[in-house]
Amino acid sequence: MQSVCYVRCVRRLWGPAQASQILNVTNMHRSVRQLQHKKVMEDNKPWALISEVGGQGYIEEVTDIMKQHFQIICHKDFLQNPLLHGPKIQAMFVWNALPAPKPALLSSLPSLKVVANGGVGIDHLDVSYITSLGVKVTNTPGVVSDATADIAMGLLLASARNIVEGHQIAVNPNTMHTQCQMGVEVTGSTLGIIGMGHIGCKIAQRGKGFDMKIVYHNRSRRSVEDEQAVGASYHDNMDDLLKASDFVVLAVNLTPETTGLISHRELSLMKPTATLVNISRGLVVDQDALVKALQSGTIRAAALDVTHPEPLPRDHPLLGLPNVLITPHVGTNTYTTTRRMVQRMVENAVAALKGQTIPNEVKPK
View 1 (tube, rainbow, N blue to C red):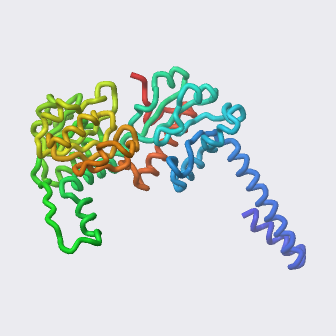
View 2: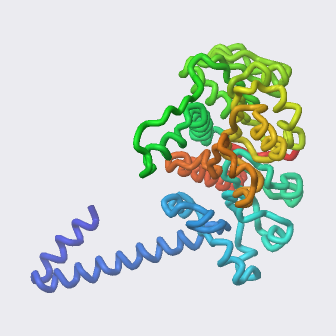
View 3: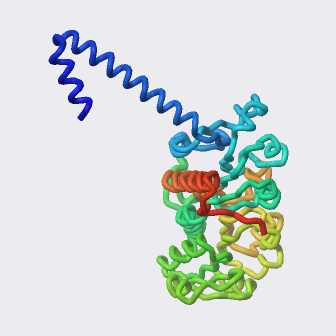
């Protein structure tokens, strides 16, 4: 209202040309003040260390989420002058395990308040050490569950119905006629889920949609309501689940207890027609034992979104087996889930810096 009155007064006191000049100068001054205010606001934002934009780091489309609340600096730029940048960094956003919050890096960040991890798994973080420095640790459970369950089901279906092999036959210029590619039936088969957390439950939902019989093993039994929602039956003994299942999906966190969870003995309990699907961590499976089981026909096939290391050495025997399907740890790789993960990372970090309740704080065990 004041601006409108000002314009009217100028037009009454001055001629059209002079009034236009005065108003242009006024608008220019207003724009300068707005830019100065915006710069002050930007300068007041806390600094956050990230890995990189592009490559193994963040897609360009999500950096705007971080920039709403933080000034960001990439790790390579930080390393150009850590003495200058280190004291001002209050948050670290870890994506694909980078930047690695090792003691050498942490010691150069005296103002650090929070390490916000993208994803559920925190096996790459020394939570006890980080928290001993007075630094909070967070992760992003829940927001990754649907996308990760989708990739588990996708791997299961692709392996069961030889979808990749079928594509290769269809596009091969030497293919003159359709070849018979016999797969295995998914509908009505038994799906065994090891690890019935958020992701495990989402996998069970998808299995139910295919009229699969759902059995699961977990550290603790889910509620009757949870079981009934997906038609799942609990096995307190993992061996019984392995013996009964046509498809075994691993959805556990990597811990000392789950490292090497599936090895020679466990694979020998599975049906020779069974498929192992791993969307947890590569170290959950003894890969040497898996190679032998696949070569000998102990199990039918394996479908893996995770390996150890990632990627596997190019001469690793798993890469040469016809009954293995491997994707490069893409369980959460959708635009929607990636944005949700980064949004949750930012929410966790902002809460930590403000001393508020952190939505997804990880405590040392």
